[in-house]
Amino acid sequence: MEITSTIAVIVSLGHGVLYVVCIYLFMILFSSQASIHDRDHPHIIKQRMRGVCFATTISLLTTGTLLWLAHSDNIPKVIELLGLDFRLALPSMFVSLVLISVLFMGPLAMLYMEGNVSWEQLRRIPQSLWNQPTWMRNYLVGPLTEELVFRSSILPLWLIPLDPHLSIWLSPLIFGIAHVHQAISRIIRREDKVKFILLATLAQFMYTTVFGWIAAALFVRTKSVAGPIVAHVFCNVLGFPDIQKALSYPRYLVVFVVGLLGFFGLFEPMTRQGVFIK
Image (cartoon, rainbow, N blue to C red; front, side, top):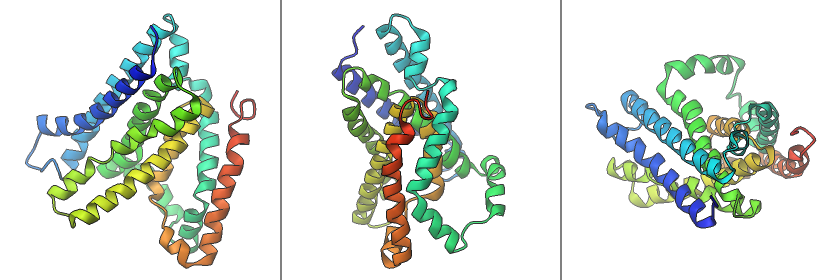
């Protein structure tokens, strides 16, 4: 079987649609008195997590089957293409964590200098993951399922008929678009004026797309989804960088710029085959 660019795009769009649809489908099928638009209600969070786990399983099986047919029943090759080769997991995680820490040097320095983080807070993270559904969603299930769908299930299909650079630049658009649905719930709940919600949604689309480029590049270069998952968790924990504050304080701005330049300077040598990635 030959995987063409048309097949890759159609299946990828299907993965994105399935991921979003399953979020709402599971909330409707297993509804409670809580509104499906109350995304932070514990019951709603649990149903959303079940929905995305179901969607992730379907997406992985679908892409895995297509790759299996395209590579003459070569299962080890399929596992490798999906980024699930456990031999590459640790190097990918190490490289990705170093690079994303350098990129977020500004926000990290800002947190440290303003005393907004402590070892006690870091120590409580594992306990909070199990006790707080929002933490479980934001820092475990969300990053894990999104990377398995939008990187493992989509990128291997694009990399067969398309140039790797083109795949890295274009495929994350699906990842960005998949987050736009959150604007609908915010409008229905009347959280803010529509124009402000739309502006916030546009900013989120841009941020998720930029992160998608980074995650896609890490996936292609390290040949593992483990690194992008770690990077995703890291970004979710820190949140969107406070650019406005950085522009207001020169010392913060300098660290932001150094981190950005450091990331671009280190990316190619650190992800080069034979350095950390065998």
